[in-house]
Length: 312
Picture 1: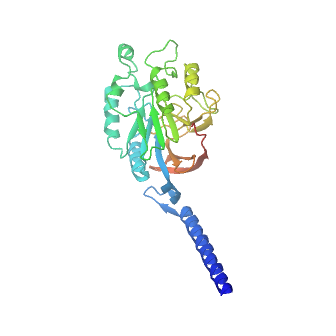
Picture 2 (picture 1 turned 120 degrees about the vertical axis):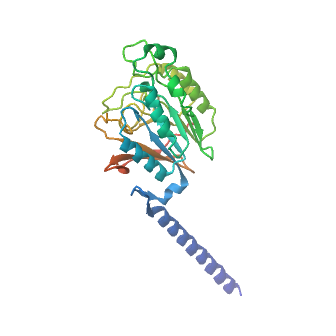
Picture 3 (picture 1 turned 90 degrees about the vertical axis):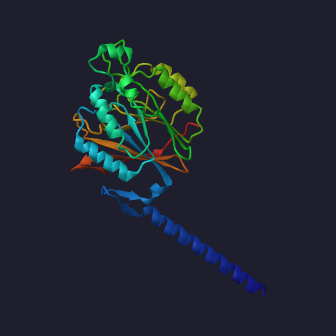
């Protein structure tokens, strides 16, 4: 009888082992399976376990290609992101007609939008307005500056690093010491989110290989506040190119920029946007760049992968 019981137990354990092996095998296969969407780009089922964010920048209405704008809407609808982040320069010269075009396009985006202005979003040739109300036209768009994912694992704060006037010759440069930027960092510092993301138009420094300079002022004030409010990720625009680098001036904070979405000034990098996928159960981030090719935006082969340093 004891031998029979032992045989039964061994058979049961073998069955459980076989079942677990089959389950793991099927689960692995499901993660590797590929499906096609309307844009013809491949997606792995792994994405079901990640939160997706679309990052666009430097749209430059007034100098934007309408075909690219339409293609971007189709791509965003196909991707179905939880949020669309815009890191500045919606317009070319900050004109009323350009903001009207931007408003009409933004209303067609089928996702929550978080945005910050850029240096082109001030009235370029109206010095009085640049002094009195530099971002009034942008602000009237009523775009939100903060967003959290449904599970509260991702917290994004967008802030204005641009200025209408500055005490230096190049007014296109940013200012990290502005109160709005520091307050956004404070809000992230008080967040319980797993991923704390700050969005600014200007990168903290010029990436290697860039054709545009980014030399923001106010970095000392920002870094002091950063020591109290650690940050996981900084998303920026301004460069009209895709970069992914640890910032040497911000204690290694990871910085990502994307190409211009639709401007004629591609600066040799083409038109495109970023798609970021945040892991649900571990600090994993995967970014792909979607580039405009033959009338549509398609996922390029380049990927940025890595484990984020969680601010804690």
